[in-house]
Length: 119
Image (cartoon, rainbow, N blue to C red; front, top):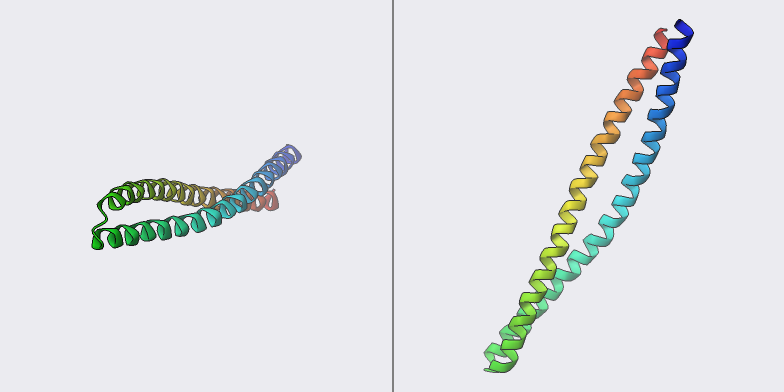
């Protein structure tokens, strides 16, 4: 019976180790995506700032037609920036969830390995 318990614990430990490896790989991929989105977000901010500057310039020069077009482009840039920001925040949330899952798996693995030493 004790050997059944030990083999059950060892099997559970192997499963949790495999889950930990998969979670760690997913977390690495999420971090890579986050880096790309962070750069995209910064570039989107720059585009919004550039559009705002061009609009202000057109308004200062009294170029109403150009200002009208630039106002539309500024709104589009803001919308796209909002989409990128939403994606970035969602990904950040997912990274935090994945970290929590890894911590839970580590704690469970440590608990299981501690049990196998007792048996």
